[in-house]
Amino acid sequence: MRKKIDLEIDYMQESDLKDVLWIERKSFITPWRGNAFRREIENDDDFSHFIVARHKNRTIAFIGFTHVLDEAHILTFAVHPKFRQRGVGTQLLMYALNMAKSLGAKKVTLEVRVSNIPAQSLYRKLGFQVVALRKRFYPDTGEDAYIMCIPNIDWVRDVNNGHFNNLLRRKKNMSCETDIRL
Ligand SMILES: CC(C)(COP(=O)(O)OP(=O)(O)OC[C@H]1O[C@@H](n2cnc3c(N)ncnc32)[C@H](O)[C@@H]1OP(=O)(O)O)[C@@H](O)C(=O)NCCC(=O)NCCS
Image 1: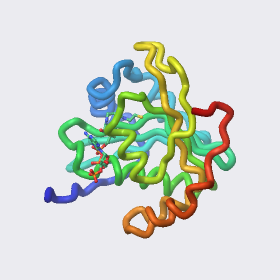
Image 2: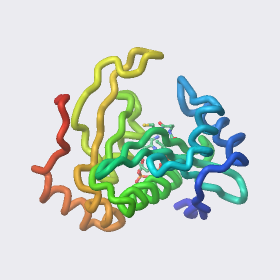
Image 3: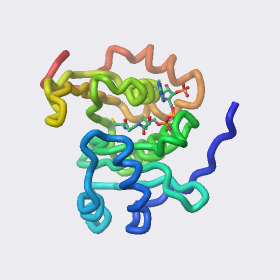
């Protein structure tokens, strides 16, 4: 088994941008441009949070989410291709979920391309469920998006032990409220 990667988690800063933009270009068909990240870095409102994971002074992953009242929404999330499948995505997403929880979020939502199996697997592992399908959500390819959601962020707490999955099975009747159903 590969050794767990030590991460320093921090708010995104201007000095992270070179690495962030490289990862962004390698990860997405329509990458965000530098100015979009710069706006988020300079924006000191309480609604959006852009977090990076650094390893040996190198930025290797990032995640951005908004938080309004009891709902958090993941905007962007990627890991450097060379560091994938080594637990970095899980660590960073868990950090963001715990942060959203401490800010008062109860529910977390996100959109994911229907073809993006790696991301969907990670989200399911942490307790997200598919609650809706948004047709032709992505203008670049016309691909559909799944809306995924954790109805109760408290469910994430036990993710590191088997108890978490049992808890999810017990509570499977609870679901996120949404206007678009599958
Ligand atoms: C999705 C992403 C962030 C996952 O990051 P990661 O660091 O590789 O994730 P982890 O190593 O923590 O993997 C956690 C789980 O995700 C799933 N997973 C990760 N990569 C996978 C792959 N290539 N195929 C299938 N499942 C995969 C597995 O369930 C894995 O659990 P396991 O290790 O017990 O099998 C990464 O693949 C990435 O940056 N993709 C490009 C950008 C992207 O798609 N972002 C999400 C937009 S919605």
